[in-house]
Image 1 (cartoon, rainbow, N blue to C red):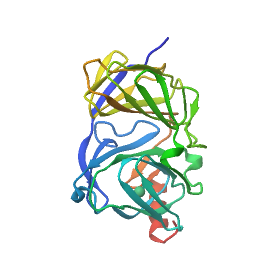
Image 2: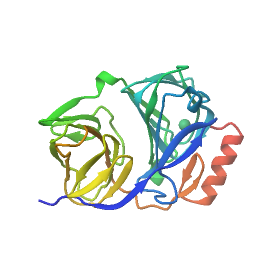
Image 3: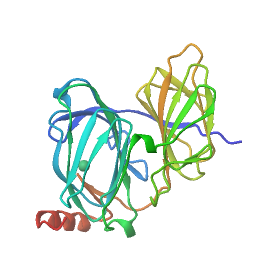
Amino acid sequence: MVSRTITKRVRGIPTSDGAGVKLTRVIGQPQLDTLDPFLLLDEFGSDAATDYIAGFPDHPHRGFETVTYMLDGRMRHRDNHGNSGLLEAGSVQWMTAGRGIVHSEMPEQESGLMRGFQLWVNLAAKDKLTDPRYQDIAPGKIPSVEPAPGVRVRVVAGEAFGVTGPVSGIAIDPLYLDLALQPGAKVSVPVQDGHNAFAYVFEGDAVMLGGAVLGLRELGVLSTEGSVELSVATEAQPARVLLVAGRPLNEAIARYGPFVMNTPEQIVQAMQDYQAGRF
Ligand code: FE
């Protein structure tokens, strides 16, 4: 049986986005520009309101999908097509921006912990101008499975241990898992061969992955064949790991802020369409 190994390690860089929300950019920064089909991974987490209260006022997206996974706190989402929703702790929003939306993502709290992730998933050339689509998934709709003693897995997207996540109809066939591992626990997670995958440790101190140590706030880019062997040492802290995989697109990427297309001409078109109110 083939086991995936860590081929590259990356630590996020502190930055801010929106109207001044502090976050850590793990994918979409010089050390890891993209991990096809993933364009960006931000981790946000603070109990200081000044770090998040300004939120993300109106801004556009075209050509890809944004996936917001909330761990703590509440965020209100509104767009220019009249859609709105509340992202609460434990929920996920898989938004296909497609040909374009303008939206805001604002905290619906003035104090307390706000924590979660935003992942950007690229769309294939043929899907970049598709109709916008939302999948807002409440916490109770995300199934949880215990495949081994001391291992609890929330299946957000894809299939794991006989359980299928609620996010559906996504072209890159994503796997999005939130794994909680107790000290001494071990688990083998099957991942589709040929799909790119990464693991990111966001609680605890370290895990073992494919025979190597992956530390807290370290992202491991994984080799492309086999399953993912994860364990936590008996003397270590309980750990939590994001494990995400998807089919690479292998297409040219032209990227400018919130627009991700295939050619520079399409970026110019996106800017013109946005400025002319055609989103
Ligand atoms: Fe956004």
